[in-house]
Image 1 (cartoon, one colour):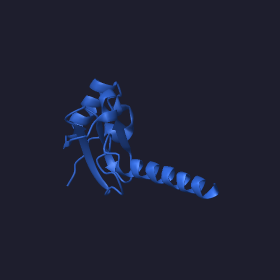
Image 2 (cartoon, rainbow, N blue to C red; image 1 turned 180 degrees about the vertical axis):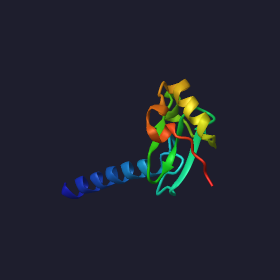
Image 3 (tube, rainbow, N blue to C red; image 1 turned 90 degrees about the vertical axis):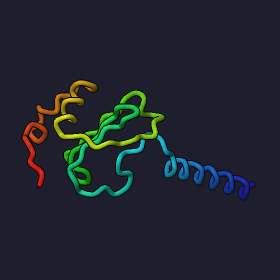
Length: 107
């Protein structure tokens, strides 16, 4: 009886772990250990967005209602478009935060 319970429990834990690791929907641009880089992306399928300083912050992630079951197709966008679309699509004014309000010159 204990052996059957242990096998059932082990199988359930393995199934949950595999689902979490291999679940393809609603994944961020960098799923594991992102580089420290300033980048901005928008999903062309569901209009979700994420961007900022990956791996360090500040960083913002906006998910649309359609994103839950979306296999994202992340496309790079400019910082200005990211700020504009965050306000337009999600009602968030990023310019109230000092980091988002400053003009950035990337080299």
